[in-house]
Image (cartoon, rainbow, N blue to C red; front, side, top):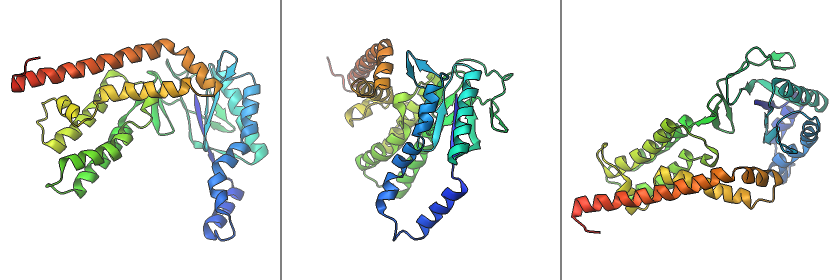
Length: 301
């Protein structure tokens, strides 16, 4: 996989400065349509990449290029195919006055060791193989094909501490929880629908969410907060992750995009396994709450 970053050329920078300097003669619609106009501008590049015969395919569907804003991700099963895709992008850039930022572009191999004997170039720039690659805010580990959630956990703690610092010590606990759930939890689970986490990283995400409850409600650090989450009501991360993934897969299944539907149908087994795990987590959560109530209050069920 190769992630290419597009930078503004000299003519584009002059246009941007003129738009920022005096907007009276520029319709507001231009700023709203800029992502759409850029997509139209590089539409021919997508066609050339798809017709090249290189890159990653699922059946007869070409998925070797993923574009979002000014970021392009190129996917190929071989170094030769990846080099051909990069050459097409470089040639198109010279023809259409598009310059790629080699300093922000990255190269990684997923599912195995990086083939460091193979040299990938972008014009005169030689890529170096990276252990992980960052794309659209997510850090993907190459060898393990897993996501590194460190940046999401860091943003969660930063937002969490800012909210608690603004609210004094006599804060209303449920109000604090509402703010944390509204503004902090989305930053922790951002793009979690596409995550593949190893067990230790999944534990780190769960600990971050549990620590928020311990801090708000002054719970001892060695105590479980699942009964507290149950009565708030807030779901634990072990339930939130499969819930978001199942809802995401449902949207993909009903999508009118042929590629998304094909990907969903190829992952039927994974979806059913995730659904089974989701129901198992709910049963275990309910059993834990019953056990805590029986211990604390002597209830008989």
